[in-house]
Image (cartoon, rainbow, N blue to C red):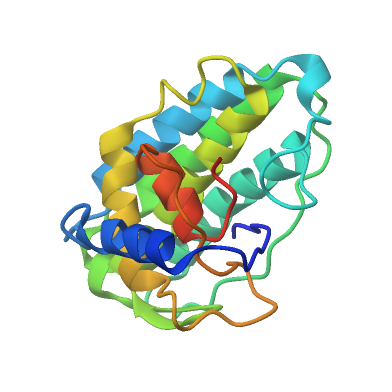
Length: 225
């Protein structure tokens, strides 16, 4: 899951603006998150493919994670959600694991992620899984909510990776996808109930004129400036 930095210096007005945009950006949640996940995975695939060999040690907006750790987390997440669906109703999600044996080579990581996302898509093509119960670290939820959590993680890390890569990567992100994900995050990650320590910090103010990804990052407790 995402690991944003924490900051308690947000102004009440800015936080109110961020909260409002998080909860009114788009219908939340979509009945079927699979098309959104496919778009997010397409974006992530393109980003991973563009990582230069000398960029795997670059820091990312995820506190303590470099590009290598972030991409490994995303790869493992796709594998975990595929395994969750394979287990069927009542399955408990396994703990995270760090992928090993991959060189600092974009083609190797892209191939591994392509395989993982294809496996996830194949398993979750079964419509019955959307309403089947699953046990995740944050509780028992239907499959559509579980998969929406995977979507949230993937979209957020697209922004992380794009920021680490720089250039035009952030500007080329799918804004409509981020708007939907922001609306889901407003319901799934409420500002009032965030354990400390936990994967999400307090809501931060979104910069004036921030795009959907910047507002999503601020909602999840990150510095989007």
